Image 1 (tube, helix red, strand yellow):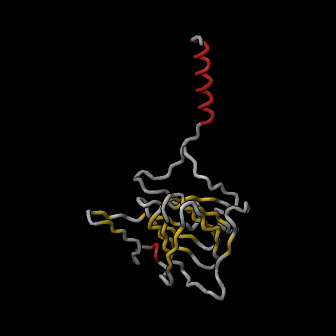
Image 2 (cartoon, one colour):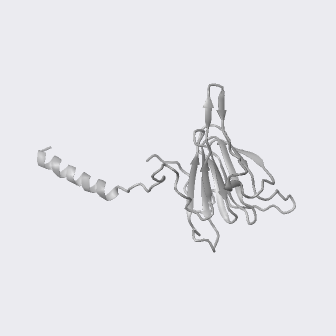
Image 3 (cartoon, one colour):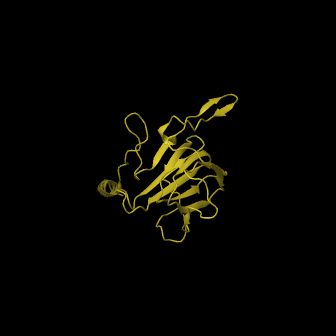
Length: 189
C-alpha cells in the first residue's frame, strides 16, 4: 500500500471515529459524589464499608439520616440468582427502600407517573460487593432488579408500608414481554 493510500485510509478512519464518538456524561460532581438521580424522588446513596483483618462492617440504617425519615414498619430480604431479573414491579402506595448488600445488581427504573417532571425517563444504578448502597423508589416508579454477576445477590427492602396479604400493593409486568422497552444485555464499552 502506498503512503498516500495509507494516509487516505487513516484520514477516513479519523473522520469515522470523530463521527461515532460520544462524550461520557458526568456521573460524579467535582468532589466525586454521585450526581443526583434522574428520576424525580429517587434517591441513591452509597453505604460505607469498614474493613479490617477480621472482616467487614457495613452500616446502612441510621434513623438520623433523612433517607430514613419515614418510620421503618416492615422489612424483608430477597435474593436474585445469577442472570435472573426480578421485575418489572410498581407500587401505588408504598416507597421501597432497598439496601443492596451483596452481589452485582443492576436496578432499572422507569418513571410511570403522569404528573412527574421525569415521566417516561429510565434510570440505571449498579451495585456491587465493593459499592453497596441504598435506593429509595417512590410509588408509581416501575423497577426491575437484574443480577448480572456470578453469585447470588442479596437485597433488604424496608418499604414504607407493611405487606397486606388481602390487598397486595404490587403491579407486575414481564421483563421480557416487550411492554417496557429495555435491553437487558450487558455490553462492554
